[in-house]
Length: 242
Image (cartoon, rainbow, N blue to C red; front, side, top):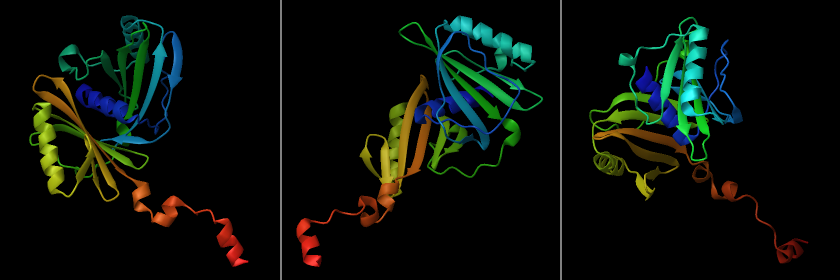
């Protein structure tokens, strides 16, 4: 559960996607909040509706961690033992499960240079999961923990691979090139109105997280007259019509 949630949050942060789909009786309580950010949108990961939120706190990460663990315990959530947790992100993180509502809660702590802490809060409604379709883009051979999400017309695919970043990037150069895509900038591939953005992020030596974002570039799908809009009429043309 922790590995998949870590990948979910990584993908959510990369595309700045946030979702809402469930109501619960639990309220996040982060100490000394300075500001809070919620980006509107809808996101599903592995068919599971997810809500993400980011807050900035004046408190230190260790204090926030201890406080949120206490709130999880007070709410009666299940917290997996250390041996069942996998740390996929460099920042401290923890996932707990509301076994009554089947909603998991995850927080990730990111220390800031100014002494504040950014806290990413995630809620995944496991009880509302739906079956996901097959992968929409090539997957590096041996890739594991594949997840797909969708938000406001864009889809994201995230997985882990035992390989160096350069080898995974070379795989996509070959696979997407053979599929008719052309690279117009580093990591961005186009075919008609479809755009794929590929991000390869090291997790540890010899292991990477791969994130593929697919979206339709609406401007390219429109007819030129619709895309550019009406053109102003010159004074001479107007006079000729009269």
